[in-house]
Length: 127
Image (cartoon, rainbow, N blue to C red):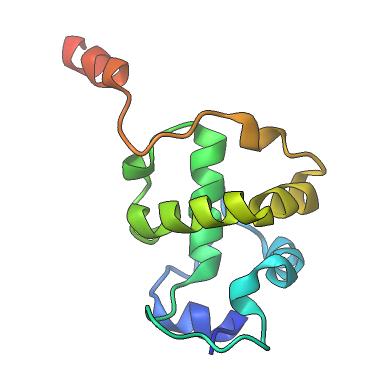
C-alpha cells in the first residue's frame, strides 16, 4: 500500500533537496491531497513510485516551462511524471496542490509540452 514513507523507499532519490523541491513542511501539506496516498484504497498494478519526486518534477516543469523530457535526472522518469500530471490535472488534484502551495492556480495556465521546443533546439545549433 502507498504511504508517504513507502513511496519514498521504493524509488531512489537523493536526500539533499534541490532548489525547486518541496520542503518537508510543504510536502506535509500536499500529502492529504494525493489520492494515491489514501489509506483506504487498495492499490494494484504498477509498483510504488516516489510521489514526492513526482510532485517535485511536475512543479519543476510548470515553473521552468521546459518540456518533460528535459527534466533533471534526479527526478522520476518523465513519462511517469507526465502520466501523473495528466491524471491530477483531469481530476483537479493538481489545482488543489497549486492552491495549497501558492494560493493560486496561475502556474497551471502555462503551456506544457512533452517534446523539446524546436526553436530552442535551433538556437542551440546556431550558438
